[in-house]
Length: 375
Ligand SMILES: *Cc1c(COP(=O)(O)O)cnc(C)c1O
Image 1: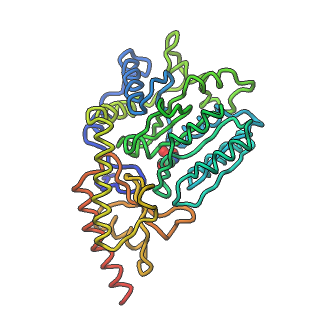
Image 2: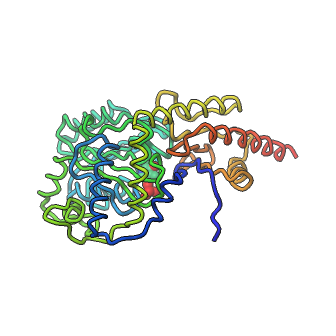
Image 3: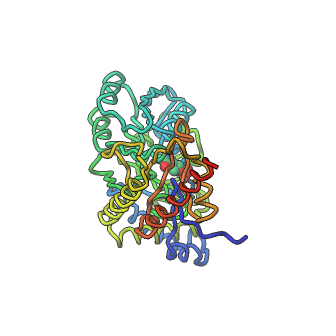
């Protein structure tokens, strides 16, 4: 099948660089081959750079990011544990579902979609549930375009002796993530957002405290595949690597290349590029008379939630962009369905020529939608 070239400006996947695509097509070798093992070490080091951590247990899970979310929670939770789960969009809701299935008593801290997590409310909940095992939240909510204060949330958990679980699937590479400075316990991401690597792998990092907690569980982790105690035999290389599952060898080539590119650009430069492209987009949107859902100070540069004007058919505009211009933007999810568009400026997509192309195409699509509404 001939796959079209799309400009991917939705909530992920983002556009993949040609050198990552080249890396993916190198010859497949055995996953226990010494050459592949040294590549694994390289990937772990590059991930430590991306996450800004010295955590030994830092590696990519062989699965999409949702499985990293699940791995974080099922490894930390034992049946009967209290889990403080924050929800200010779609992904916090998914965390609550996973935690409940793992047998946790879930305390859900819910906030309006489009707003950041309120620190005072979380602080109060931590005081009310001192026995809680963990606090789990989303740093960069892709469903709403909101950034929350991960550093302060992790500090609240850390000071109370509670483990923190941070979803920064959309954050990593696009906005500052500092796992060690935050003293965060489990932090995970995905490849297909600001890392510009195809979907299917999920970088994750565990603090020493989290690893100790997992090693001293009273019950077995409910999932064989996600049980960190077993996975580590493969990824940690302690006492020689043992077979756990066949690593997605070629996908790891691609991740290694994408992470090396990020390091060559530099994290700070990457954050700055995302910020500048967001400002460029914001100016273009303003000229088209479009507004953001989220207040300026809480906006994610890499995920822009734009309010659909009352006179516009939102699905028509999206399909026009895709079918006529080859540009993908995202629809609203959950309570925001039909009300917003989600414009991603992630990774390789976050470049001036792409922003300008989208603004031009959007102007045309909006005019066409209005002509049709009148006709
Ligand atoms: C995309 C995303 C996920 C899920 O990633 P998948 O690779 O689709 O499983 C989880 N959390 C957030 C915040 C995301 O943006």
